[in-house]
Structure formats: structure tokens, C-alpha cells
Length: 116
Length: 112
Image (cartoon, rainbow over all chains, first blue to last red; front, side, top):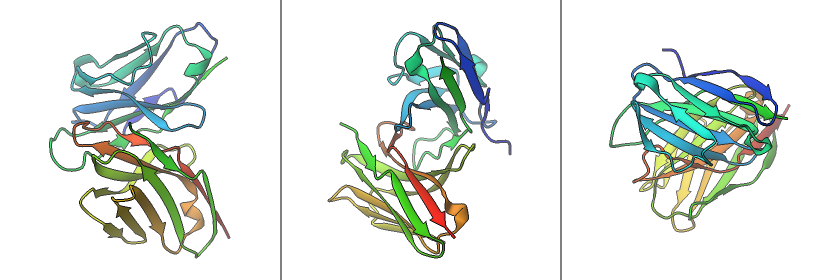
């Protein structure tokens, strides 16, 4: 079974530019999550998709961030325009749908974003 | 509010036991998790414990949960150099499906 795949692994852009991060979840996983770790701090929740619908986007920092999940498959996270404080590692995770028991998330390797 | 705290560094000798500690503030946590991150890799789930349990053992890993003190620990027996990594504890509330609150991570260094 292929894991959660993220692309690019590392992106270096200048302040004001746009970057799009992509996440391919495990096939069949309806839940898709975005998290990020900024400056060695804790990993913070950004948002949660169930299939193509945004279930919870309470962690999105501001309107410069736009997440989409076309057809309930892969997801993209666009940052436009990027600011210095957006630098960090963006993790994607997926899990199967289910309402009981531990929701076991499988994480990707992350996309490191450096804004200069 | 939600807050999960861990000590930042732990250094042990190969063969010794490692104990990584975590405290959390939200008493409504339902599941608590331990994740491991090796360099260049994603977060790997090591184990998790349901909030009504006190202990869970899985091979070299032992998780202890003290709900009264809101304290979680991960003990790694016979620590190996391959265990060197960042270890994150995380909690989730029953109403926040998949919305994990992570600690800052503990960097475990195992010396030969």
C-alpha cells in the first residue's frame, strides 16, 4: 500500500510569491488533514477534509491560505502571497472514515517551505 | 484551552531505558498518541492509548497515563541507536475527530 505522498519535498520562494503544495492520500482514505510545524514549534492543525468537503478549517491562519480537494482525491494547499512567517514544514495526513475508536492518521514526509 | 508540553531533549546510552514525558491540559482528551519522526521522514505512529486506560505495552514500548495529573509517558526499553528521532505526543478530544494537538517534540539521542 502506497503511503501519503507530498510534493514538493522542499520549496524555496521569495516573499510575495505563490506556492502550491500537493498531497496524495492513501487510496480509499476519505479523511485528509493538513498540519504544519513552524520554526521548530509544535505541529498545528490547519484543516480537515472529508472527501471533497471541508469539515473543519479552524486552523487556517488567514485568507492567504487556500486548500482544495478536487473530487475527494488529492489535495492542494496554496499560499498566496507567501510571507516570511509561513516558512515551516507542511504535513498532510489521511485516515479511513469511521466514527468510533482511535482515528489513526498516516502522515506524509512533509513539504518544507522556505520563504526568503 | 489545549496545551501539550514535552521536554525538548533526552540523551541516553544504548541499552538503557528511555522515558519521554508529556503533560496536557485538556481533561476531555479521549485518545493520546505517540508519534516518531526520523530525519527526512514523516510522522510514524508508534502507539496510542485510550483515556480510560492506565497503561499499554507493545514490545519495547510502554505507555503510562495518569489522568489525574494529566501526564503521559513513553518508555522505550533497551534503547537502540535506531531509536534516535523526535518523539511527539498528541491528544485528541472526542468531538474533534482527527484534530490532534501536538507537543513540541522531544529529540532523543542514543549514544553507543
